[in-house]
Every structure is written in structure tokens, then in C-alpha cells.
Length: 68
Image 1 (cartoon, one colour):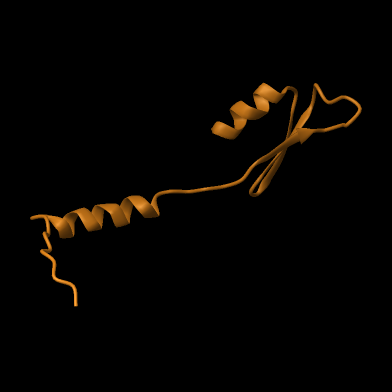
Image 2 (tube, helix red, strand yellow):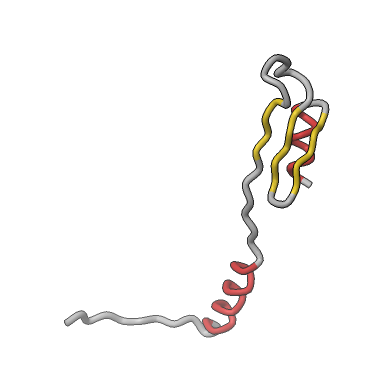
């Protein structure tokens, strides 16, 4: 048997509801950026994202596109 004092904050039910809503708003996806050609690995990059495939001229453009 465990003896303990349990302290429940005054508005615990509101906090739990807010945490539940915020947790559902998080979205995670994976994106792959790779050179379009192994012979020319410093230009033309393919960006594979859920539901899309793009070809961009530079790696920095591919990275910026991923953040949008």
C-alpha cells in the first residue's frame, strides 16, 4: 500500500483539455532531398515529400521549399 498526498491543481480539467487539443495539432512528415544525378551532385535536386515530387535547381532551394 502506498500512502501519498495527491495535489490536483484548481483548473486541472482545463489544462488537460488544452494539452489534448495542442497534441492533435502536431503534424510530422518526412522529406527526402537527393541529387537528381549522381554525376552532377551539386545542382538539380529531387524533393520527395508526402504526395509530391519536385525538381529544384539548388540544395538551398530544396531546403527552403521543405520548410514551407
